[in-house]
Every structure is written in structure tokens, then in C-alpha cells.
Image (cartoon, rainbow, N blue to C red; front, top):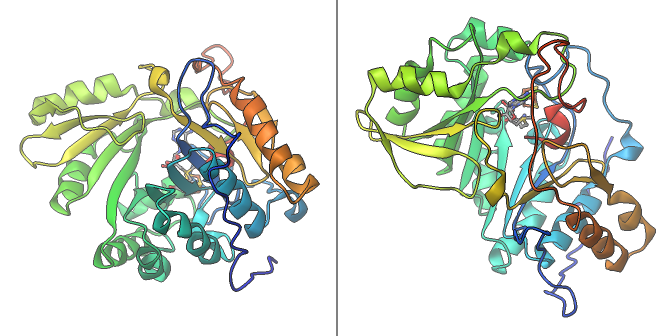
Length: 350
Ligand code: SAM
Ligand code: SF4
């Protein structure tokens, strides 16, 4: 069990002289950090995890204090947007201690946005507290509005619990974006309904292509559905107006004329969005991935634990950013049906 301190040490890192902002070899400034705060989850989505996953031993996982220190170090080096993810971030014990502590960077102006991606199962419990910290927007992952299908996709989840969570989050004033993974033969008949539902509640909706990450015990090819095909189908039902709305992420948006709402497409396999990549990812063990689609990574836990000061940590971050690749090369291995990368999405949090 985690020991949960009442509050985390307020280790304020000034934008230190001698430590410039993070810029990679291709001139891209690193301003967006996604942090997986746990590899655990209360769901077992079929495209994300195998049913019987083995999770990391506790000693390997960064403590809440270490996560705070790591995030704060990145913020001191120019990160302006921080997304907590997982696994399921809201099942990490003491998560509100971490969120509350990190929210000081919003108040100081060092951070533009603190946000999270969640499956929504714990939102009823946490929505008010999240809103109180200064979080304004969250992403909720939801692939279907059909309770049975929901159970089949998530294996362990209950749709009504997530719906209650979404209600609570909206009541607390949080803006929600719905993320839907497009799964061939599973939810491809539901996109029009999902769009109408989300937009009628004032929520954007983004469709995501399945990415070939991790052994999940089922054929990827069965799940893969190119969004180019989905978009063409939707264009027969709705007028999709191209808009240049961007959230700093890889989604490309259209406005659905009939609903007035925004619809995003994240297409890692059919469209390369790497040239404007401003992000890096840290796992709950302190491993920094410079690209979601590449194996190359840097261990930040060792320098983090080696000393109380941040010099070693900054040096490790600088060295890693100097290796950030130009882009990824996802392919679904059609002959062997193997994932392009062995790591599960729950490790880096998407
Ligand atoms: N548990 C939280 C959730 O589900 O929102 C946060 C972590 S989850 C790994 C983050 C996002 O990654 C979710 O929207 C999920 O649908 C998506 N995801 C997981 N595995 C994926 C895969 N293989 N391809 C595409 N998206 C995936
Ligand atoms: Fe859990 Fe999110 Fe992965 Fe589903 S997608 S198993 S909710 S981490």
C-alpha cells in the first residue's frame, strides 16, 4: 500500500538559469508531458490489456513524491501542459494528493494546463475535487453506448458507472472530450449515435485508430479499422466541415454541421502526425519515452533517486531529448499478426 502524505513537499523549481527549455534535434520544443501514474486499471479493454496482466512490483513504481518531483522538473524546463494517465490514473492510491500538489504550477503560471485521461469509472467520486484543483478539461474514454458491448470491450467495466461519472464531471464544470477507439465489427455501427450523443451534451468526440501496442491475446487485424474509411462513411450522413481547431495534440478536427459539435480523428497508422510532435511520455517507473511508436527510452528513476538535487535528472532528460526520433513507424505485422511494439498502451498511457 502507498503511504499517502497529507501534502507533498513544495519543491518549487524556478526556471533555472543554465537550464534552457527542452528542444529536440529537429527543433521541436517539448512543452507537453504525459505521465502514466500507474500501470494498473479497473478495466481490461480488449485492445489495451490481456485479461490476466501482471503488474509492476511496488518498489519499481515511483512514489507520489517522486512523480511530483519528476513532473516539476519537466515544468521547470518548459513543459506547459501536463496530462496524467495510466493505466487508470484515478485508481492510483492518493492520486488527489498528487493532483492537488501539481496544481500549484497552474497557480504560479508555470503550467497552462493540468489534465487527465480516464476511463470515467471513478469520476463520480473525484469530479468535484478535480475541478477544485483548477483542472478544466478531461478526456474520458468511451467506445460504446451499449451496456453489453461496453462490458465485452472493457471486460470488467460497467457503462452506468461511467455515465454517472460523466454526469458528475459535467455538474462539477469540467469540460469533457470523449475518446473512442474505432474497432472493426465492434463499434463501427455506433459512430453516428456516439457523435450525436456527445455533441448533444456539449462534448467533443475524437475517434482513435487502434495502435499495435502490446500482446493482447487477440488478432490486431480483426480490430483495425482505418479512419479514412470511417470518415468517408460519416461524410455520407453528416456535413463535415474542416476547421483548423487544434488542442496541441495529434487530432485533426472537423465540425459536424448538423450537430455544431467537433469531431476529431487520430490516425497514427494512416496519417503521420510526427512533424509537429511536442510531447514526451513518462511511465510510472520513471521511464521516459521520447516517441510513442519507438522502443528507445531513458531511465529517469535512477537519476531521480540518486540525489535530492535535480542536476542528474536534468542531465538525463537533456540526453534523452537529444535522441528524440523524427517520427514513428507503426505497422501492423500482417504476416505474423505481431504488435509493432511489445509494450502495452497502459504503460505509456497513450
Ligand atoms: N485508463 C485511461 C483511459 O482508458 O482513458 C487512461 C489510459 S488509456 C491507455 C488511454 C487511451 O488509450 C484510451 O483512450 C484508450 O482507449 C487508448 N488505447 C489503449 N490501447 C490502445 C490501442 N492499442 N490503440 C489505440 N488506443 C488505445
Ligand atoms: Fe484500462 Fe484505459 Fe487500458 Fe481500458 S484503455 S484497460 S481503461 S488503461
